[in-house]
Structures are given as structure tokens and as C-alpha cells.
Image 1 (spheres, helix red, strand yellow):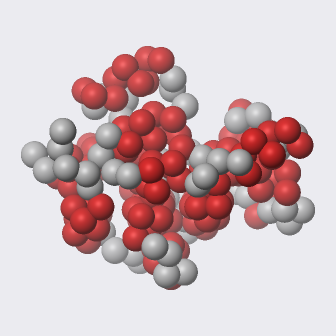
Image 2 (cartoon, helix red, strand yellow):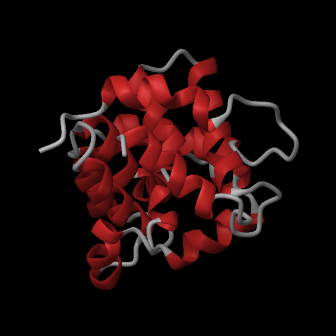
Image 3 (cartoon, helix red, strand yellow):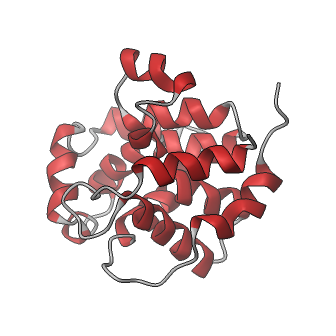
Length: 183
């Protein structure tokens, strides 16, 4: 099975479920985030990171991610580790940091909080709330923090019921082009 087939299979099996209190499915949410990344003419690795930023939610039954779920059920960490075995850090690190990016934006952008959906406000509390000054400095020291902030903003936009986007299959060439050789 190719990597693209593996990703399509994961989304086909688990991506139709509702996206945590939003009016879109998990798959629609990722497709919309990628759509908004493309509108901004983001680099291809960021488009892919936007598409797959919540893949960690879908990996609970995937054989090489089960141990990650047992040791750390935070979807951004699970997804990033799974993606790091398949893509470069420009994809996996933006995914790993997209949840801290919400906390960062709540601490550094006065208008950001009011843009969050009710479900996102709820998860912000579960994720630790806005960052403190020390956490902000640590986040800004991360090499891919700016990319993660961009993915976060597309994540926040990707909750529009009925929005027409590309399909998962349309991203097969991008997945293939950015994938690491199997080791």
C-alpha cells in the first residue's frame, strides 16, 4: 500500500465522524483547512500540514500509532510522530505545534479569542488556556512556530458547513511528492 493509499484509508475509515461540536466532519475540516492554505498560496508542505493537522484524532486503530495513543493521547503529538515517519519536519512540526499555537494566539493577539468557535473555546480550556510569558517565549523559540500559527488560523477557518473543496484524492500527488522514501 502506498502512503497516499494509507492516508486515504485512514480518512475513509474514520474521517466521516463529526468534528468535535462543529458542523463539519473530520475530513471536511482538514480539506477546508488545506483549501484556505491554498487560497493564501502557502508552500506545499504547509498545505499538507493543514490537510493532515488533525490526523492524530483518526489514528487510534492504526497499527504503527497504537503505542503513541497508549503513551500520549494528545492528537497533535500522536499525529506529528506518525507524520514525522512519513514527511519532513516542515509538515510534522507544524502539526505538532498547531494546538500550542491556539494557546499562543490567545496570549498574543487580543482579537483572536473572539474568533474561536464555542467548541474551540471549550478545548482551549482543556489544553491549558492562553500561554503565560514563559510559554510564549518557549513557543517562539520553536523553529516551526510561525508555520504552526498559519496552520492554526486555517484550522480555525475550516468549519464551514457545505463549503466546496477539493477531495482527499485530489491531494494524492502532493502526498506522493512530499513523502519520504520508505525505510
